[in-house]
Image (cartoon, rainbow, N blue to C red; front, side, top):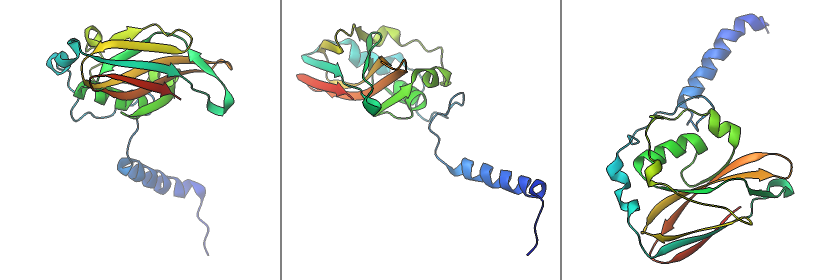
Length: 174
């Protein structure tokens, strides 16, 4: 059995790691943009969300990882689900369904088309006593974005996709 010097194995190990990384799915590592297939900003994709409707969201925060209680630390954002926001949130949160990501990780991630301004289409509500609500919503798919702080000083951002359909829904972010 021959022993090779670790220095001689380093290029082979590095090549194998790069090959594996090229095949692995990406989840939006801090600082690395993920290619976007369908995420070009188009204001017309948001048009449906500007209408009023009979749907509403009654929400509460009950996030307690490891027994540490977290509380709202800012307004709750409600963002229309569009190809642009889906691609953006896939990068920021690693999911388009639900996530809990440290705030510093979200802030460190690079999104495609970061200057696209979709703020005119978002809604926000003050979070009071870990509760929030949105009323008068049209039917559709939305993203809830909630900054929370833990009793241990940790700061997270919770994201959840919800669907409204002509009536009230209750959502617990946990």
